[in-house]
Amino acid sequence: MTEEDKKFMRRAIALARKGMDANAGGPFGAVIVKDGRIIAEGYNQVTSHNDPTAHAEVTAIRKACEKLKSFQLEDCVIYTSCEPCPMCLGAIYWARPKKVYYALTREDAAGIGFDDQYIYDELDKPLELRRIIFENIIRNEALPVFEAWSSKENKVDY
Image 1: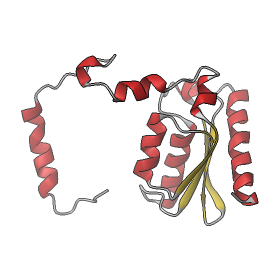
Image 2 (image 1 turned 60 degrees about the vertical axis):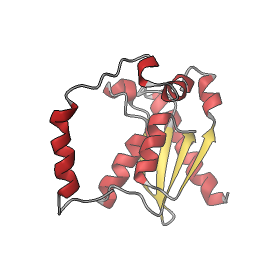
Image 3 (image 1 turned 90 degrees about the horizontal axis):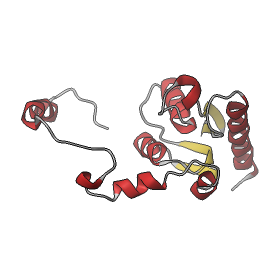
Image 4 (image 1 turned 60 degrees about the horizontal axis):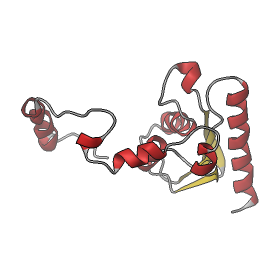
């Protein structure tokens, strides 16, 4: 960890406070850095946008990808004020940054009411035992779309 890393993390923490003070959502902030410069920022906007996906990391990832005109964040570093939740973790892996720094832990977040443990627990359960019902229907009607993708010549792999 360098002084520059601390500077970027302090910005993520400041964004967490900014969003919280604006009643935009929970106290979470994130910045994305490429080549030593912040290219995107975000803070939690779940309640202000009525969007359960508007977490700080997802918001910053969307902005960074738009700026870079890419769906991947290769050679980027994400600084987030708290260890990413399962949704943000998935988004981060899809975006493929080279590193993630976080300040607070998921246990810290649970301590103020943001406990994601139930999601981790749900992921370990068979579908039929999960809280939300998942039912597989008309699979045979959907398969042709996947088959078309599989043979599509001008697709962009990711």
